Amino acid sequence: MYHHTPYSQLRALARMLSLCCVLLVCNLLYATNTLAATDIDNDNDGITNTTEGMTCTTPSATFSDLIGSTYYASATTTSTRSAGASFGPDKLINGVLTDQNAYDGATEPFNPPLDITITNVKPMDASGLYLANDIGVPGDGIKDFTIEFFNTQGASLGIETLVGSGVTNIATINFSKTYSSIKSFKLLITTTGPSGGGAAGAVQIREMALHGRISAVCSGPDTDADGIPNYLDLDSDNDSIPDNVEAQTTVGYIAPSGIDSDSNGLDDAYETSPGAGQGLTPVNTDGADNADYLDLDSDNDGLTDLAESGLNRPDANSDGKTDNAVGNNGYDNTLEAADNYSDPNGPINTPQTACCRGYTAHSRCKLS
Image (cartoon, rainbow, N blue to C red):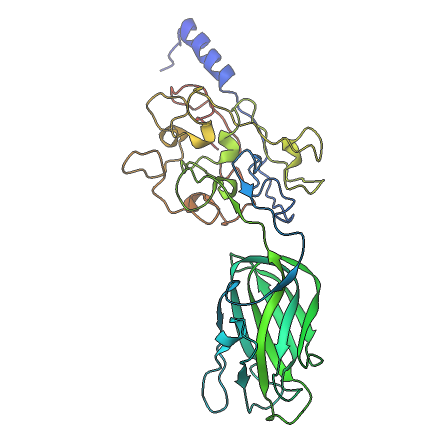
């Protein structure tokens, strides 16, 4: 049976729909590849690092040989000598030039290579390798080797192929470029220097270190206490609504364009012109306490944003935070295809409030 709707109800519905307009926006996947030093929006959410509270130390303007245990936490290897004794690389980072370690008696080229992995106490920027080869007969030091650099997440920063045969005492071997924020590095040594009286296939090394400086160290608030600072967290309050969405009103929502023509790390959609660098000014719907992207009840109506979102994530204790695990990017694992920063608005591609189910028409009601 067809039922007529009273005119007054139609008018009320029209008013709600005018407020709860549907914005047709495209969810474009993108990733910012600029270096952290020039990236003003590390997590691609449109809110600048400064707005999200990031502060960084200023690194030294000069590079030097960073030698000794002050700079290196550990040195390890999986290699053994022919006699079966372990090669102990800990002496390579103790800063003492009167002792050395040896890897003896192997047929060259080493197969598998002699591997040495050194982990830094703090991330470093480096342009070369300080190397103190054989303390005795020249030629027993390392000759052909590669060195690979890794960041704090364990991702490779690049590989250098180097020759150290000319280092009979102490020298710094330059890299092809400067590597930033190195947390660890791994050497794979295949051959030794030309014979000089030492044992065949002998590698004798006193010390090695990076020629560089301590990288800038950045920190910032971690609102949801998930171990990820807000400037690297796609959902800083852990309510499953991405910061990119909560930082904006529904009606005025601007989707990421996926374009960063000036390479400053900020999507061009969030600056008046490329390079201007403004970023989003986070909205504060209730005008109290925190901005919406840090507020678990953005309109102070007693209902959490998570409950109002329609995303249907579990929240057993009703604290307004998802019970699901979050990834390294701080977002609910069940709502993303990949744990990275390529999709800053997550599944909420088209914010809309037409299906708010009676909730206040504000930025909380943002459903795909």
